[in-house]
Image (cartoon, rainbow, N blue to C red; front, side, top):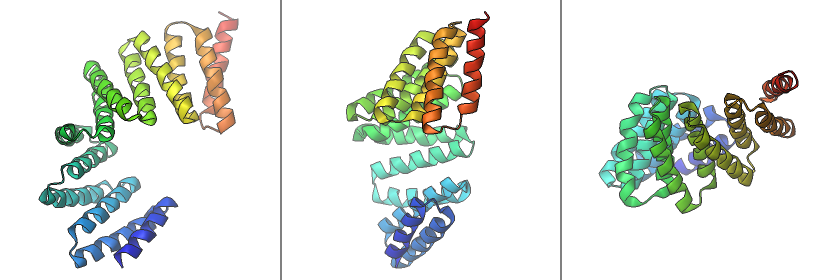
Length: 257
């Protein structure tokens, strides 16, 4: 019975039908409780928590993750505990409570380091860097992003490299370290190109354009935005109107200095 509900929930989730997916996972949770299978119950609760988080129901998501954590602690599965702690941290970020995320992230970090789980560590260091950057703690943010890059490189995580270089570049840009920002954003752009991710490439190039504007180098900024507009048009990206307007302003500034 529970397996049928889980199968239905996965189908609904794949289709983006979150209400139906939530109902199916709730039934799977009820079935697993009756069956008395803690491992299956933990998995169903985790999936229900994920769907609730996607739906914006942060309170129910947190309740699910906390119950999952209680089950995992009795089984002493350190890796699973760490992943659930990261989910709880991410949940507080999504709910606009970043100050509550940090303790979960730090506990997860203590568990993941001895396990050498570079994929999870890369994501975790990236998240910690994002939080430090939000608080304008530039040095701490860069240190976390650097750790994330090392983890991504060890396992060849191209997507992780692209995203972390992009955020690291933005952090350098906001802190005024323009040369380091330029290097990071160029790296991000190259990795997004390898991934075939036009939206990511465009985002990195917009930041580069902003950097060149700050340096009073409108010609380089214009080249970046010309590429961005081309990506917008070809891939139907939603920022086309704004990017065209920025490009027109730059062209105007160059032709009438």
